[in-house]
Image 1 (tube, rainbow, N blue to C red):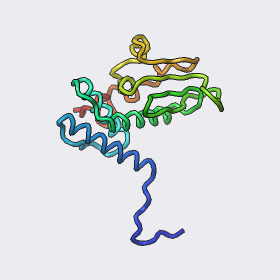
Image 2 (tube, rainbow, N blue to C red):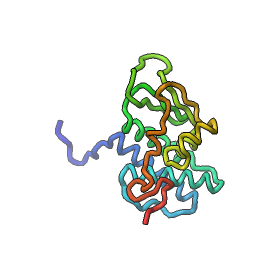
Image 3 (tube, rainbow, N blue to C red):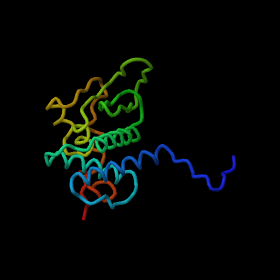
Image 4 (cartoon, rainbow, N blue to C red):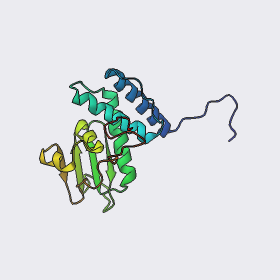
Length: 174
């Protein structure tokens, strides 16, 4: 089908997610009294910065912006699913999302053979590396069942050097 002149191109789901993430990040930064994000406009640095901004709000005793938490959780779950494709473990972060990850037996009905569940801010701390998997399990902040329910080898999502010039807590690296 030919493209008609004057018709705007359709945005993809990935572009819409990135735009929502960017908007949520800037909203969280504004709530923290910080300038809008000016780093690279690529998915990983924006996601890392959003996670960092949400965690900074929590550490400063402020209530993180709901849209930023939602965007950060969904983005980090998508990143985990991309890095560890499969269907043997379901990672749940209610109320924002769940993904199936890790290769192994595929289930077709009901609860998968392995389930990990935690609340949003704990999940973001795990994804950023500000809390280790073992610390979260020991504190009963994570419910994990099944033989493949150990995410220690998959988290944090970003190395200590950060993503795209940003540390796991969203700070610009020198």
